[in-house]
View 1 (spheres, one colour):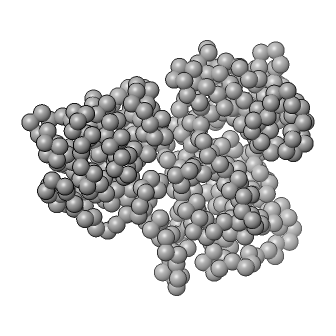
View 2: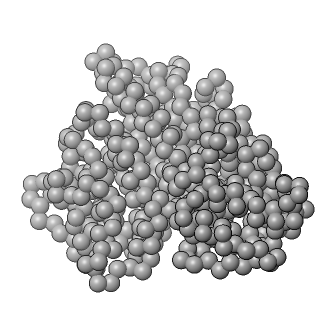
View 3: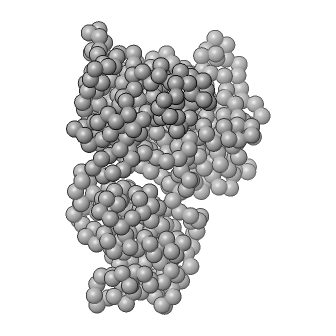
Length: 489
């Protein structure tokens, strides 16, 4: 069991008082679905609640068909609905039913939009279903600590500037993607940012998220980070998320939150103090009380940090900004030039030129041709286990680095390998399907046809190359990942 107040895990179900924060656990859990609850005709089994907010409760659950852990978000607006203890459904008072219905439709609509988003810095939605008078979103369960955990672990509750740069670059990438769909998170805070061991940052809990539909009412927010228009139930938008991001940025840099928006409404004389000029300007731009005075584009706001007007921009930040939608999969920095090394004398000049010209289809075809040549399998036209096991690391590294370099880190064998590891890192049917879903090779549980492959930078991360196998040859493709791993790519 988890304490929903302090997030302490591993509490025995017999314990009534949290040993960490002292809260009375039965009171905290009184309207949470009990452990063992089956959802969607027995497809999912609830394990325990992970967290709750004004619009829902998130559970750790088990997908019994795939035998994998997932997170399930239950739509539960506590101001409008009351849990029925007999069947787990909801009772909604007559005056609230219309508002509840609109909010439920919005929850489902935003879930579908997030499911199609397929962005590596946004939690992935796997399924949506309705029962018990409400709706549920099934999402990937991400094993990682929160940004709050990392801040709390620091001696002064603040982070090194290079770490702040890495986190902010990925958060902005995530927000840019959802803003393009006219979705606003509206509850940005360190608790809703997950940090993976490989450095990836994932934005979660869109329970307060609102699509631009003309209605202004919103109540799920965290008052210490929320923009004044969110608190007031007024018009919200990109500027609202930028405000919360500015509050988080100040906290990451100093260990302290600025005064909440409510305290600045009557007399606003607060200005950030003690920050370097490059950060001072960024925080100042994000935190005006009047949303009209804030930037209306999250990436343009962040890019102002590395503008030519700044005499000494940080060394790593501009490169992160230029690598648009980069998820930092690659284990080493991208280089403007790749040394074309081959253990068997293969010439990679043509592949390099195709990639440099953005001719992704031709480059993918050339990749397969070259790999068969390196493996001495040109006559057979396919790879066996022996040829994969003995594929030269030098050549594998050259091909991988070329794809990484010219795709800004979106494509390459090392990118695909990391996604494969996140899917379980095995050679079996379940991993094969999960990987196909993650790489965009499967849609709605069906493998796509070869002519549906996306040969562009708009494709999902890791979508290319297919040179090592790919559609119809998934076993050889999975075997290649063992080789990629042994070559330390």
